[in-house]
Figure 1: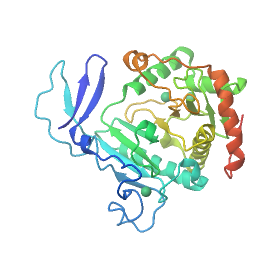
Figure 2: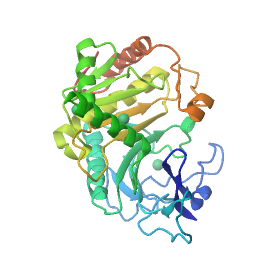
Figure 3: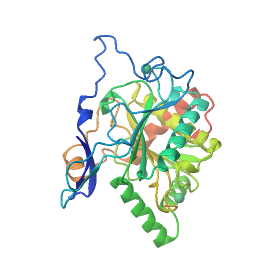
Figure 4: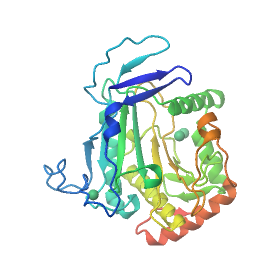
Length: 336
Ligand code: ZN
Ligand code: ZN
Ligand code: FE
């Protein structure tokens, strides 16, 4: 069974994918030799001659262009629809280990180019309403494969999180006749307190309203609607900022750091020119050793408590940024 169910209480969609319950988990180190499906020579990749970055369909997709038929009526309050969409995996390098920051700037820019190409291509599909690009890393967040990769879900609906953001940005625009994120960027740049890194086009900051102790948001300094609006040069500055952030997490935790990275773009249909593209990073640790768990108050009520103060926590991130700046070759901006 594979379908999309409406939760009428919260007003969001849930993707039900029975077949995904059988997907494999990476075996423990000492167990039998594990063949990485993303390394050169893997069955899905043998047809490719030479590659640096490659986009493949997800082997266990939650959504598909030819979904299973839904054999029941959609009615109130139990609405249902077919799981039509697309799930893709972006293999970022033939190298088995690494992260965005272990790639050269040129290579990381190539990854951004593939994100953009996929974003534009998937946006064209008539059944796609939202293209969600994200990167999960680390066993702490349940990632079974260490080979550097990101994912894209082309969804037939707009996620609630994005609906909330477009509502807020639209309201701010109509009330003050300016963009919410442009305003935040202006304020943060004038104060500098929470700004961690800055290059020509982007600032990376620990938000005033962070949920996670080491949350980092990457905002374009000038109003930019979506990833689709960037050219090669623009993608290079984005790649630069993401390399610095991923490197500083590893510096901060003194080991290969887990994180979640999400690209917030506007929905693919309708005029959302007021929307300001950005990237968000969630870090599961609250210091070097301790995990910050989302539990009752967070999951049950969507209320986050921030353990510490963002204005003090940011000093640790600024410090880690300075250390990676010298080590990453060809960094385009500077740590604050
Ligand atoms: Zn591999
Ligand atoms: Zn803006
Ligand atoms: Fe956002």
